Amino acid sequence: MAGGSFLIAALRARRHRKGYRRRRKIKRGVDSISSLPDVILQHILSFIPTNLAIRTSLLSKRWRHVWCDIPSLFFDDDDATVRKATSINKTLSLYKATKIINFHLEFRTSLRQDITPEINRWIEFAMSRYVENLCLEFISPYPCNIYKPPEIIYINNPYYTQEMVKETRLHISDIMTPVSWTSLKKLSLHGFSLSDESMAKIISGCPLLESLTLRGCDKLSFLDLSKSLRLRTLEIIINLWYPEQAQIVAPHIHYLRLINRQFSSTIVDASSLTEAELDISFGLLRPTFEVDFIQDMALKMLEKVKNVEKLTLRGNFLHYLSLAEVRGVPFPMLKVKYLTLETAIFRYVIPGIERVLQNSPDLKKLTVSAKNCNTIPENHFDNYLKREGLNPDQCWRSKDHGVDWNKSLWDVSSKHMVVSLVELVLKNTKSLDKIILLRFKFKDLVPPLFHNNNVSIVLR
Image 1 (cartoon, helix red, strand yellow):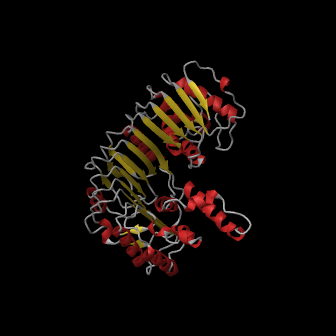
Image 2: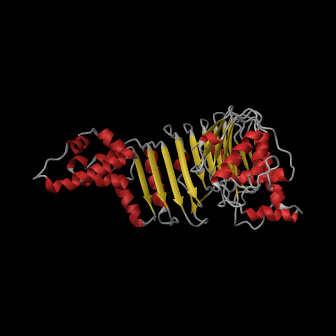
Image 3: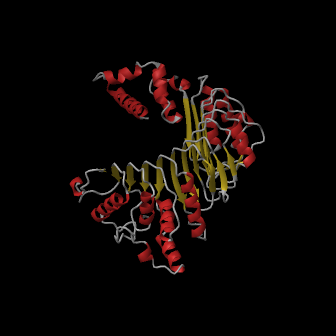
């Protein structure tokens, strides 16, 4: 991308200097760009939107046909209009490369019915040029749009390495034809309305799949990845309409990123995990707040990743762990050695942090990133505790430390908070070697403030 920006800037400078050729010579730096081999120029142009790459043909005869063989095509617009379709068709008619590395098509409005046949032809064009990485991104504001890709997209392409089909709030009908992506290694599906049967077709048609990302695939209730022997990375980021308690079987994955909705998936088998990232997405549009159920789900998720070496817990997940600790619910023992906590530091996450530290006897390195991933209103938990006959001010107080932590995300004294946090960590860990604190305000702190000969404390 930096190379593309540099080239455009240089080209603009060259164009500006054309009117001054009688009085001054063109600088060697600009001439050196023109003398670059076509393959290098095409590589640089492939990092910018295709319409900008085409504009370079106006600069001189030297640039007239350079864009026609760029290895990547990127079409990006707000509207999928007939005028835009005509422009893309003209571009593709002049395109000469026999091999496409990246084909990216993005529209940010609802798809019109008269445009979808054009989109299918563009996909067929990319497939005919043996595209390696295909990205379709239709960001529609309406969830009712139906888009049916051409069947050619499912046939075998020996050059496929990545199939990135990104759909935000765009429903795609079930797959009726067999899928054959025998060279595919990375798959990303966003906002698909795929049934269990359609998802099974995709998985069975990708024997070399190494990485799978699913975002808001709202009809899935069972995801069986037991036959994906090469699959190592699984990311599931779930939208609000995802069904309750979908089951995940992924015995071969090493890395799991699971951002659950309040009611969503359960991990049945992830026995090979070495690294995991967990959080719970809180939907403000949902009128109910079933604390007991979500808390139980969070603890079950933690149980399934108890043997991982690297673990990341984010803000909302720590909320529910804190509530479980306040209510005296047992926690699993963890084998984690490298723990990352991404959360705002305030009283609603402290009990959970304490218990996780106490139940991680092998912990060597702790990273705390003061990143606000906490989207649950604090009064939800306070009101729940009051309904249970408990005093929130007493419940949220640190049991071992006795610190009265701040109630609000924004009511934070950096010096008090950081010192208290470090003391809490040191008191609840035994084998820790290093603490890294990120995104904190350190204007009132200096490293010598902390005295511990066994633990290295890094402030960033």
